[in-house]
Image 1: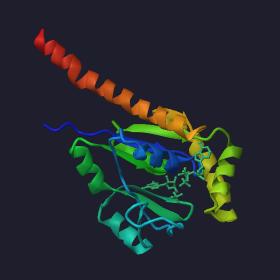
Image 2: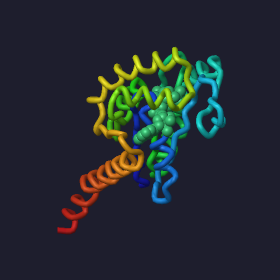
Image 3: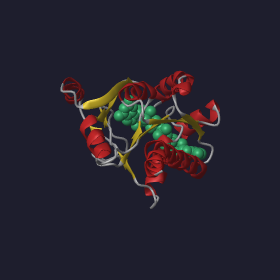
Image 4: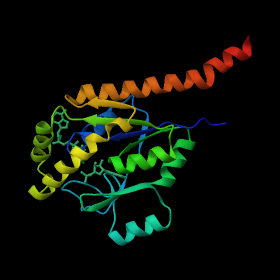
Length: 204
Ligand SMILES: Nc1ncnc2c1ncn2[C@@H]1O[C@H](COP(=O)(O)OP(=O)(O)OP(=O)(O)O)[C@@H](O)[C@H]1O
Ligand SMILES: Nc1nc2c(ncn2[C@@H]2O[C@H](COP(=O)(O)O)[C@@H](O)[C@H]2O)c(=O)[nH]1
């Protein structure tokens, strides 16, 4: 039987660098994860492409996805809906491929209930002032939204103990290496539990 892939969840406050780190990891040739593209009601930022960065949908369309059970998890974040299409995740895991979700903490909590065997990683900023500096420097949000995202950031950081690992994003390349190492270690742990010992005992 095909062994299932690993569900990897990356969360962290807005502006910590989740997208930057994820894009860097996916640009590396030795990365074998599949990225789950989320659905959102947020308007596209300059340069964002439907079906690449997100599936951009209206409120009505998003609520229909909820009603029809098409989302693994969803949450409202600073005035918009965000959610993970369930079919893609289940199908890709069933094919034995690792799936990478980049989502906020309320959604991650729902995923934990459905996939307790997932790998949950929280990306931390070096400091709150650096976090604010990063959102401001990105230049994509209004002052009001930055204020609300910073308020939410404090609540999100308080939930970091729900995660298996905390990675500090002080430097993008180091954060990527830490995340990739955690995934490799998790695979080794599962292989050890599921196969190596069983096979060894069967032979002897
Ligand atoms: N290690 C880092 N050092 C300095 N700047 C960084 C680092 N990582 C990311 N950044 C910068 O911080 C800003 C926010 O990064 P990014 O958009 O990836 O954050 P995010 O966590 O995905 O945010 P959101 O949740 O709002 O989508 C970007 O301008 C990015 O270039
Ligand atoms: N619960 C979910 N959260 C998601 C999903 N996709 C993205 N996100 C998170 O939302 C915030 C805001 O994102 P932004 O692109 O508007 O800056 C951020 O924390 C994302 O990680 C999802 O499918 N479900």
